[in-house]
Image 1 (spheres, rainbow, N blue to C red):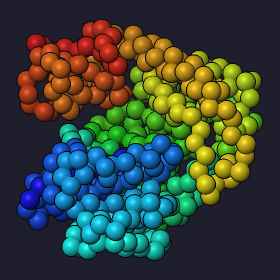
Image 2 (image 1 turned 90 degrees about the horizontal axis):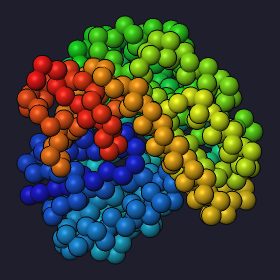
Image 3 (image 1 turned 120 degrees about the horizontal axis):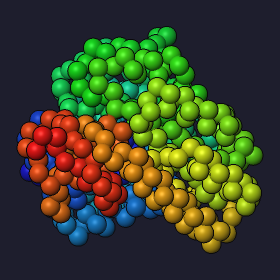
Image 4 (image 1 turned 90 degrees about the vertical axis):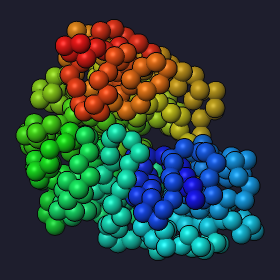
Amino acid sequence: MKAVVFTLGCKVNECESDSLIAGLSERGYEVSDKLVPADLYIVNTCAVTAEAEKKSRQTASRIKKLNANAKIIFTGCASEKSYSSFADKSNTYLVTGAFSKNKILEMLDKTGVHMSPPSLEFEELNVVKSLRTRTYVKVQDGCNNFCSYCIIPYLRGRSRSRNPESIINEIKVLSPKEAVINGINLSAYSFNGTGLTGLVERLKAVDCRIRLGSLEVNVITKEFLTALKGLKNFAPHFHLSLQSGSNAVLKKMNRHYTAEEYAEKVDLIREYFPNAGITTDIIVGFPTETENDFEDTIKLVDRVKFSDIHPFPFSPRSGTVAYKMKDLPAEVKKARQSILIKKKEECKLSFVNSMLNKTADFLFEEFKDGYYQGYSENYLRLYIKEYNGSHDIVKVKIIAPYKDGAIAEIQGE
């Protein structure tokens, strides 16, 4: 029997999907994470934007073209938000939501809609099996921030965190080359008085490279950065959520920091990690965003000099505060996004140039188009022609800009 676990959306979804992959493998399935012909499909959906929700729904028709008789299971945020849009009279469908994903494998013979109530405690997953070189480790779920544009707190529930011992044991058992520590709101990690800084200090017990998922501004302190410096092998890549460089827009978004505070936190990071990769998300065309507000965002981008940016247009999400605000014209959002995409390319090239002739630690992920490809510790995508195939982290020298990253050569070869 062949199965596919197909994931849309965030790294936390990837963690949950990896757990399902492991469980299916134990049950004798041949498992893929790509949309290929199979007998069973589990689709882990996303609802962070209207486009993500649309893609989640469209997955059904893509699967039916591969196998019209396949069993399809929908789970995740999009099916939690609107399970009826995924339900079907066909007996090949099972629809679940954002909770109790650890019980899906017990329902493989079921059809219809089976939604679970919100979890009040962290739901432990089965041991994961990643089909990638890097392993995603879920340590937190839910969010209490209620940013005015975001539907996720309504779908994922309140913030809840995982026992540090469970986290450390999982990493030790899996023994990955790199563990990526993730959560819906990772910065809110808190378990019996242990916050994210305390968790980082506990992670000194593991030997693999440690990378962190998306962070909020408030978690960046001297104590936190000192703890990261103390890890045996920390990957200095900080995905620091911005969303807007305008203080007026940040306030309307219910983001609890200013543009000035954000820039100060970036400066602090670079005091501790001079070559850090600093990436971010930026929403363009928030309902109250004026031309001057957008100019403030551009100024902050120029000030910070990100290594990469993910710009995306505001997407109204029913049930949020911002949904009631008057949306900006699509052409305005598209124009501003185009400007930010150009800035993104400038930032990426500048970051690559700052790394030329420097050494980096390369972790192989895939062989494609004649190159061994993977990421450096500061999240620069690297392309290598000659590689020893060890799948270990190796020292490389950055040679020249190439595509979305840089050409590199293994040291000593």
